[in-house]
Length: 211
Image 1 (cartoon, helix red, strand yellow):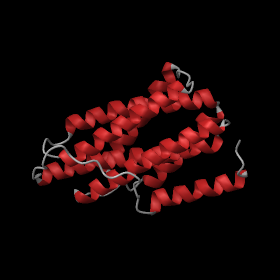
Image 2 (tube, rainbow, N blue to C red):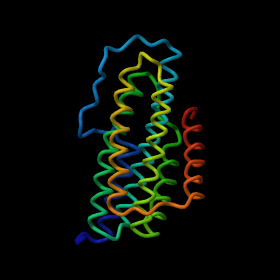
Image 3 (spheres, rainbow, N blue to C red):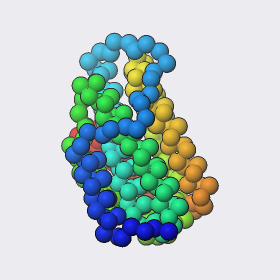
């Protein structure tokens, strides 16, 4: 049973938000290593790879917000622990993508505070709808992210094996999160909600690719 008062959990959530947006991300796991030697990238290839990794970094900003909100509002302590574990693994992704952006000479999105705030609000709404809906939202989110990452693997410059290694590990983790949500009883979301999530994600990824 949850023993921490609500004010303590709110304070912890606020602290995590500040760390996500303002502090350098520190991974718990080492950065995935490429299976082949990296090739020299042209300036155009570096810009494109940097833009793709910026989009992925925004996705991890959103994941931190979603899972922090869902953990905060979860009714079941076991499910709260599930969301917190997913957030920690997504924290590794946040650090890896940030590191890769820096290596490519790129920058993170200027709209990260907006992405975080919007995702936190959505996470709270999902959690308030009930644990099964919240888990269903988690599963659907991760299934869509898996497809999104597949698209990035196709679009990455062939020689950017470092970014590819990061994305492949991210994809494996996202599949694990989706499977865990389903195994814990996540409810299938209605088709209109799934399409709305896809449209929102498309707006986010298109904007983050440029800003």
